[in-house]
Length: 75
Image 1 (cartoon, rainbow, N blue to C red):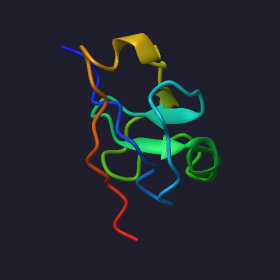
Image 2 (image 1 turned 60 degrees about the vertical axis):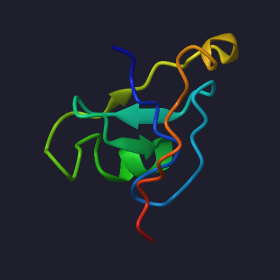
Image 3 (image 1 turned 90 degrees about the vertical axis):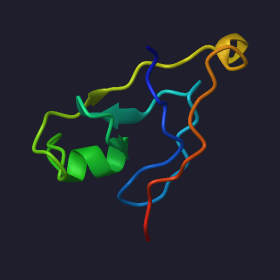
Image 4 (image 1 turned 30 degrees about the vertical axis):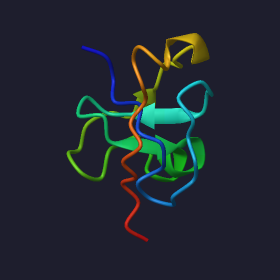
């Protein structure tokens, strides 16, 4: 089972492409940009879990394992 690789920061809406660095996730895959993760002291506001660097997904794997397109930012 692959990570969802959610496309945006849940707090500010910043785009977080799966092939780029700079995204942080908790064990439930709540996803935040680096600035928001820093502002949250690397603690997920949804579950209280630790926010960790999300790995990247090589573009060549997007067809077989597509990143999520469901945006979570509620702005």
